Length: 139
Image (tube, rainbow, N blue to C red; front, side):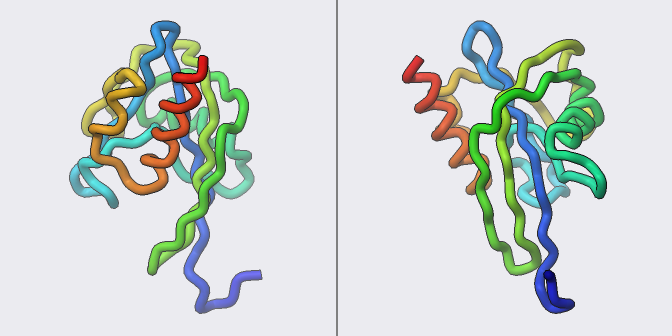
């Protein structure tokens, strides 16, 4: 149970969408957002009553106008900030429909896993990027 002085906790879902050619989708956060300008695996915060996969499908539709199928959970990471705690869970996803459009992001790119290391990312997205690079190299 959370006490009134505990910072809020947010559950966040991220999509790792890998195209058939092996490239991965990343989105750049809007300049005024927290971590503005950094690259991330697209996704967002779970709302009350949602499961993480439902939240992820909703967020990809809202932010990039994409329909996805949510697959296996890849990793869950927790991070404590002064103002909040968050748990970011990354899922392998399949792109079903819609060409990505930046509705709530500054830009998007399909990048090779080796290119992820050069992109500025927040700490949790960086950990997911390392996992993606390692996992794809093993295939």
